[in-house]
Length: 82
Image 1 (cartoon, rainbow, N blue to C red):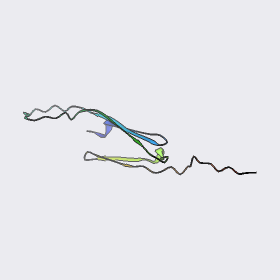
Image 2 (tube, rainbow, N blue to C red; image 1 turned 45 degrees about the vertical axis):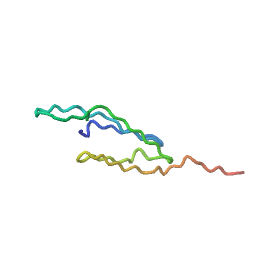
Image 3 (cartoon, rainbow, N blue to C red; image 1 turned 90 degrees about the horizontal axis):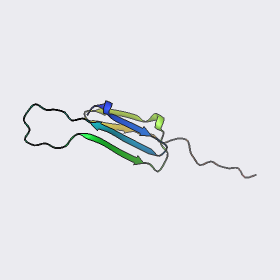
Image 4 (cartoon, rainbow, N blue to C red; image 1 turned 90 degrees about the vertical axis):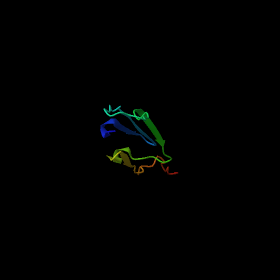
């Protein structure tokens, strides 16, 4: 699978990884075959907000690695009592 076929989307507490692996035609004789092509999608939900702008993704030798930092912005706001 090539990295061009992988897509990553992030929102406040949600991460989606999806893509498609295309079938490769082989010229050799095959004695055993599995379905190793098609589209895929994985959704991950986090308990705390993530910082989508600073997510780092790398793909090497068939392994996708992600660094997902927590968001520094808090949705909880303190309200002063007057």
